[in-house]
Image (cartoon, rainbow, N blue to C red; front, side):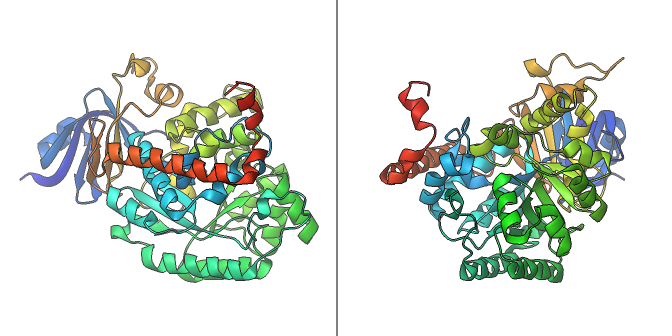
Amino acid sequence: MSRRADILVLHGHVFTTAGSGVGYLEDGAVAIAGDRIVDVGQSSQLAAEYEACKTLDATGKAVLPGLIDSHTHSPEALLRGVAQDVPDYMEKAMSPFVRAMTPELALAGTRLHVLEALKAGTTCFTDYCPPYAGWAEFYDQVGVRARLTPTINALAADTMADRTKILYEFDEKAGQHAIEAALEFADRWHRAADGRITVMLGPQAPDMLPVDQLMTVMEHAQKRDLMIHMHVAQGDREHRQMAHRYGMRSIPFLDSIGYLGEQLFAVHLTEATSSEVELMVSRGASMGLCSGAIGLIDGVVPPAAEYRRLGGRVGLGTDSASSNNSISMFNEMKLTALFNKIRHVDPRSMPAWEVFRMATAEGASAIGLADTVGTLEAGKQADVILVDLASLNLSPVLERPIRNIVPNMVYAATGREVHSVIVAGRVLMEGRRILTADEAAIRKEAQEAAEELCRSVLRDPRHAELALLEAMRAGLL
C-alpha cells in the first residue's frame, strides 16, 4: 500500500547537508507531509512508495535546505545604496535616514526585504529591529520562517551620531520600556504560526545598556528559554565606550557578567582578538558573520575561520541592504569564501562546502534551530529550495570525476537561479512566482516609501553632513 505525501520532489540533485558534508544524493527525492519531511532517498524508491497530492519535477535542479539568514535588519531595504564608500557609516551616512524612519516606512522596507530574499532562496530570517506594528504579521502572512529580535537599548536620541561625547547618556526609562516591549512581543509571538515564528531577545550591544538592564535581559531570557542576539565587538566606538565605562573590552566584560554561553548569538566580532575568540568558543557562544556588510562598512574580515577552527558555531547573515546592498545568501557565501582566502592567503580557507553548510545546517545550529531546520532529514521542518542548474552561469553540470554543483552555487549563483521555495511544507514560490504576496504592489509601495523617507531627510538640516554629498557634487554618483 502506498504511503501518502502532500508534496513529492523527484529527480533532483539533492544536498541534505546531514552529517559533516553536503550529503549528496544523485537522482534524489524528498517526501513532505504536512509541515515536515517524512522521507529522503532515491527517486525510484520514493516514487514507488508514495502517492502525492503534488509532485515537483526537480530534473536539472539542485534540491537543498532553505537558506538561513542568521542576522539582518529588514527595514533598511529602503536605504540600499545610500551609505557605501564612506568613513563612519552610521554617523556620516545613516543617521539622517534612521531619524526619519517611521513604523509605516519600516514595514514597507521589511516587505521589500523579505520578498527579495525569498526569491533568492532564504527561508529563515533572523531579523533585528524595533517591534513595530505589522512586522511579525507580515512574516506570518508571507509564510516564511522568522527568528525575530526586538531591539533593546537605553540610548538617548541621536547618541550614536555624536562622536564628541566620551560616554553615551543612558536613558534608563527608555531601556526599561524597550525591555518591556520586547517581552510583550515575545509573549505574543514566540512559537507562533505553528512554530514558524520564534523570538530572541536583543540587547543591541554591551555598550548600549547599563549593567543592571543587561542582567535583567539575561534573566528574562533564561526564564523564558530564549536566546540572546547581540552585536558584539563591532568597532572602535563600542570599545571606546567599554574602556571608559568599565575599563574592559566587550568580550571580557560580557564574560564577567555571565553573558558568554550557549544562550548567546554574538554578531560581527569585527574587533575580537584571538584570545577573545578562544574565550567565546570555550564558553559555547555562537558567532554571526556578515562578510559583505563588514567588508563594505569597515574593510575588515571578521575572525570566523579561527572561530570555526576552534570548534565554534558560525552562521552567515546579510546584515541589511543598507550595509550590504545585496541580501542574497548566495552572495554572502561567495564573499565569505573569497574574503577569507584573501585574509589568510590560502585558497583552502573557507572552501565552498564549508560556507554552504554555514548558510544551512551550521547556520541553523548557530541560532538554536538545529533540531528544526538546516538539513533535509525525516522529521525536520520541510524548508526546501530548488535551484535551476540550467542557468547559464551554473552550466555545465558535472558529476564525475569532480562534482561541480556546490562550487558553482557558491561562486557563480546570484539567487536568481532559485526556481521554487517551500517553507513548512507550503509552496511559497514556484517557477519564480511568489504565491503568497503581491510582488508588484510591494515593490511600488517600497519605492514610494523610500521617496517619502528621502523627503523627510532633506527637511532635516543635518543631512548636509552626509559624507556622500561631496561625491554627488563632483558628479561621481
